[in-house]
Length: 360
Image 1 (cartoon, rainbow, N blue to C red):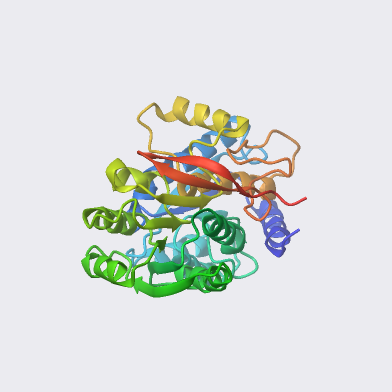
Image 2 (spheres, rainbow, N blue to C red):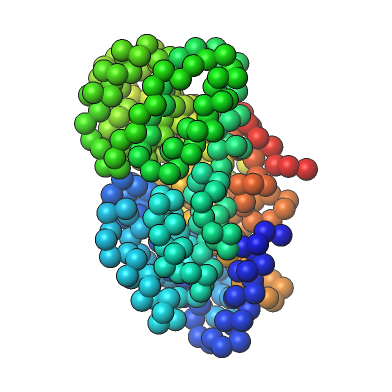
């Protein structure tokens, strides 16, 4: 059992003695900024988790309610909002989808006073041990993808491009030796601010470097703008792209004409052919209709965060939230669940193979 599990269960059990009435969950999701594309689906997944949990009787009879907070890097009031909610006892737990820089700040504000479940991929370090970080890490997600791409296409020249904060930098630091072990070299390593929109100079540099693969660690909207510039320069299909953060909403923004030769490693794709995912999508469509926001790894992880929270908080025997990524080991945790490789095709991501099996 992880330290965060021991801490979270103990904290929730102590709080249960003193609290009655609804169980309030603060939901931190980006509704603007670089990751704002993820907001609609993330909110839908949080609402589905809440409704499903309440349909089961809530948390030991307590109604589950949501408090929404904008986790954008551009929201300068987020820290104060979280501080006030925690100090006032207005939230019993937090489920967060954000970049890790924001999560690290929020963890400092919360200071282990309520459980914090952090759901998306992250660099695998740099967060306090009490934070429940359930997302993919580079060791299980990116390194097997580099091995596969190296074996399949044998590229010799890699270009590393990411946003300028801890996750891309840590991810690329881990990628460097894996790329070199494959017999290739890293010809450039570049970082741009969150929210960058002008990629003409970067595209010129990719061309000048004669790169054969771009390792793309740009978040959502930033990746959309880069990929559009990439295609305008005629690089689609000529230079491969590999990413661990591109997802279905980003692909929709990129457009089907701008995605040739792009591969993605993730713990979830909308097109995964599994009983758990088919059942989840059926519930999602029944709740939100055919025009519901596109499911994707980052946003769907919010639902899995609620499934994780339920298992930490619930004391009575009863039904549990069935996730799209459920394994025989219970709630999703990327350290215990498969990682998949997909290829962008048209306006979706087609799963190709399992990169990393669930251990044991």
